[in-house]
Length: 307
Image (cartoon, rainbow, N blue to C red; front, side, top):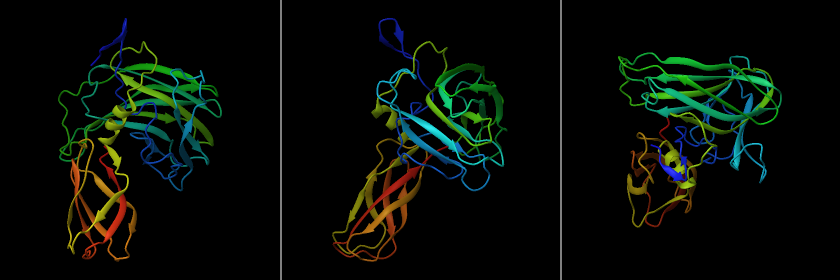
């Protein structure tokens, strides 16, 4: 939805979440594993096909720089440190709902620079999800062999996406529109990205940022780290222990929970063997053994409901 933000100015809604790379709940990197989420909502696919051949990191703009307009604070750096042997690396975002822009024109833009001049491809893929008998994905190249240089420059374009009439969705509720920037080079190189956006109207304004609070809330539908949690047992209790944490926003689906930084503060010997979660809360945990009165534990949890 568009709305007036000032005299003769209409905000153009960015369908990409965290297009300015402001949110990094998983940390600032380096991310070196194959096929991993890095900056929130941004998936890095490594073309090496083997041992990590690149790192992805959060980099910071100099205050007051003018190469990329709008005073962005951060950009994403893909640093390929060894030649790829099995395909090309790419940066992707999966936008919830394959109906997004279906049968319409998609307008995109982003800033890019490289350690050497090179080229990239821009691909859209309509994914109909998993489960049941979904239709096959429909991929379309928006642009191929787009040349970029060693200075920041903006790439803009548009593409008419296919209608999804007559298609069948999967039953797992994970259908999506995929936006992919694929790097043509398989050699050693470094590429920086900033101010990514996708919208339903022609691009006529500079990149516009949502508030950090709004951007974080959008990210937390798909992933969140709880920050430090503590369990304190007032009496001897057998698992499960209930009522731990409520999510700040409803997550897209029941997330996968991963316990991190577990500390048994009183040396009880108990560990968390499982965490009970749904889209709205962490509502319990199973301990490896009974916890006696006064036992205390400290930990945090990653909650992943990405597409």
